[in-house]
Length: 374
Image (cartoon, rainbow, N blue to C red):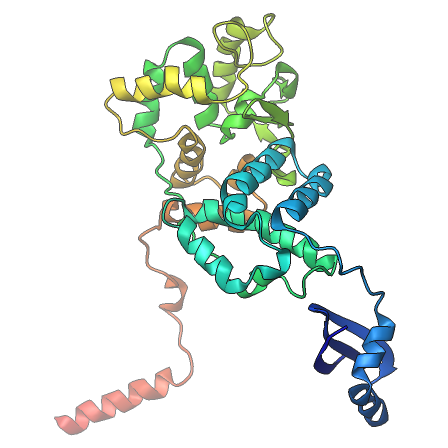
């Protein structure tokens, strides 16, 4: 057994002994108060005390990144959505295994991870690298918790810079043109999208039972993505959306297209609900914008359009935030503050006829100076 002494530390007036034994780092509480005598004892006997405090794991077994990675992904799968598990597994196979698969866990160093991130940045966006990094970091964190490695090397590697996606909403005039030129059910879909702020997956998963027409409420209860029906994106995404008059009319019209044919509000030509947005975009969205000679934007921009139009028209930011299912208004402000119009008005006009401090004496002094000058 080899021991690399690192000394002692004090937390909350309690002495901890720490060090690496056979390449594995430990920090254990002695449960002794940090008195002068106890500190001297701990420094003198750190190795033996640490050895007694740890329940030493079997270090004869080593794991490759591939072996432990699959194990980590499996034991954590119950805490993630189905699509998230698919994403994690795909990221692991495509971007982690080819580079680190056969490495021993203990061999992975921060500099190796920096080089790996730089390599990924040549072909992948910063946001995607962050997602892949989250997968790898979670695996290494499990290895650290199991005391297979001394530290999580990701703790010493800066994450990549992320360029925020461009918010490029449609103008109110464009919305009028697009919804008037769209045909049948797709026009209804776009009206609901533009004037509720619902996400694409939430709209495709919308069922008639979610809508309370008399109360004027849409209940957002589920979402669909990549052929998997699941819960909405976040806890706050479970929400009640106010049905605006234009949305009410669109839903009444949509009734003829799907009510009685499907429990879902929006269905395809075969009468089935959409399990992803690909066919909708390819067959309806892209041709519509092309025919209207309007700059192409992803379908998700309908959500941004709702927020921008409502804020531009002076609607309360709290209401907009609730409609969109944001955590709080700070999230809404961080995304859409630039769309809130600033009134050109003279501020604090109530101060004009009031006097404060030495304003009177200053005026008298000014009068005397003018008299002396004359």
